[in-house]
Length: 358
Figure: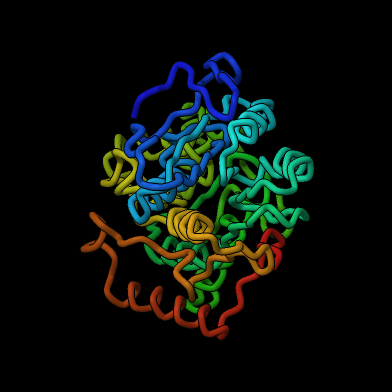
């Protein structure tokens, strides 16, 4: 990937000073050739950046996959340094006449709504939110379902009888994971007559542990250090790049505790696979790819129902156990798989106040 110091599009010269970083493209491959009109898909990341190994990384992968599927699609992104960058960056992309503008993350809802309202003929997409504007295609994920599986698994694997979770910020795309995790542990306790405790989140009060940041790894480590000190031997951070502080510390602990990652399979996206039990996968990449390829092909993106990822449609899932595969008992693996089937069939109902609106 190269950084474009400045480029001209739609009459606008965009320099790096505008919001801390100039948009980056996917090496410009195919841009400007004579093979027909290009379709430009432009992404604004949430804070945490493109290398958060989490939801921003997944969304960018979706755009890269869309480009592979249709070489008429050109892609680029700009990384938000703070929430103040959202409107600026989206406005720049509108001025550049991007065909599709993707906002990554529920925190971007207000800014996206405002820009979409002002530009009703512009196609937007947003991850982890649904907005009133009919030109914003929503991609939402019922991650509570896969997190329920993860909670059950964690309870079954814990030696200390205590597991933990923490978030980046107390917002629905974060707390939905934590709700599902708590309920999965509760299901294990009920099924097995056990009393595994969850530290870091109380589903009833919706109170718990947060880094208040999606990038600072030292903050993630600080929160998980506290949970480990309280006895947790498996921790699920829902904090984007901040959670890498936990994965690195877990790997350095030599097996004292392990981690359940979220969003993108941590064994593919982080350097800490040996410490990762599994990942609660939010299949952002496929949802983004499908939306952009459809739009580039001239298909109208219907806001209702939009896209809601579930276990049934593989929009959310539990990643392979990778290096823990031999350590997870066969009967526990089977029970976790059965839970997936039961949730998909509606036999087990998973609830969260943060579940996507249809």
